[in-house]
Length: 315
Image (cartoon, rainbow, N blue to C red; front, side, top):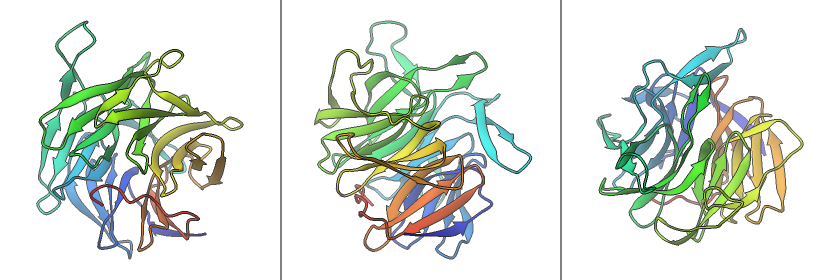
């Protein structure tokens, strides 16, 4: 494998998407933008979104669907390392938005979801939508990390929504900082990672948005896959390769953790940023891994990854 730096000076990059022209579109959370990085490293703004654009993926109509977490407050260390701290002072809620890549115009698709748990109001607001994956049936799954305040943290979950804006439902709850999300090659399992616990979970599906619930000791109905120990870590976003392995961007001990679908085989590739936050597969053979090193604002590429990535729906 060979590591190349493509761009630097980015403001907490996340949500990379490999485009057909060889460029990478990603978000800059601290800048509030959807940004294109060309193969030669040129950086240009596609859309100014504001608040906290986070996970992103291409929809069936070629528009980008973006999870907007509503915004963070930030801390920059003396060496330039940037990290999110907690809910922004001007935070007003999270949402899912749809962005026209030709015009840069965006529209909000979902800000609330039906409350089916028989307590409280009929609908509840999204808190901190984080990561997203499209299925092959006109919908998408996304995680809500929730927001952190000085003495409290939200409990949120995993959601399924239609690309036409017509329906949204909560499919797993409660979770603690649900973050990365992806689909298995056969589209019958949704994987999601929890940041604070560094746990990888699976949601087994009967059909689109229809989750088979597992009982105690699972609090959300998800099936536990793995919780590797031995190092200080949190889990961020993830992708799935063509063999069904789950590759999780790993924080604190920064790098990429590869976990087999049964949780039995685990390997780790260290990378030079404590906030290794996200990745995507690209290149002609899907063997180039693009990684966001967010603390120091870099996008890198890892060539000749041992297994090709799973091509995403609509990629």
